[in-house]
Image 1: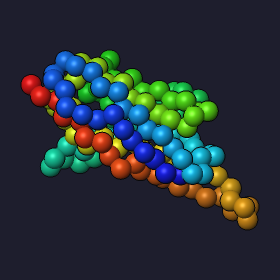
Image 2: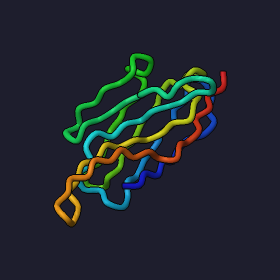
Image 3: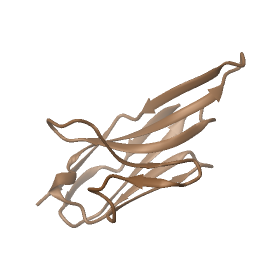
Length: 123
């Protein structure tokens, strides 16, 4: 699977942004889809994740402000970010876990990353 993220940008504190990520290629067997972020000088951290059945989990720092959702038919995952803070500034990456059977009958486990999209929140 290949992942393409979009929707980043520059906003002021308190404003909103919506990130989207579309999967393409071999999309069968996609399980959890996630959003990570990495700020300058910091480690990459999990922001939010959602299972195939729609169960979501969030980092404490974004609970109540961010909402993750997915469309299994369209193979997309979205992160709605409200009440943005300067500390949300980072490069955001979408991520997907995949398990599928190839044409030879072999199970293939794959973890895919999108290219990253910059989110900058000014104070």
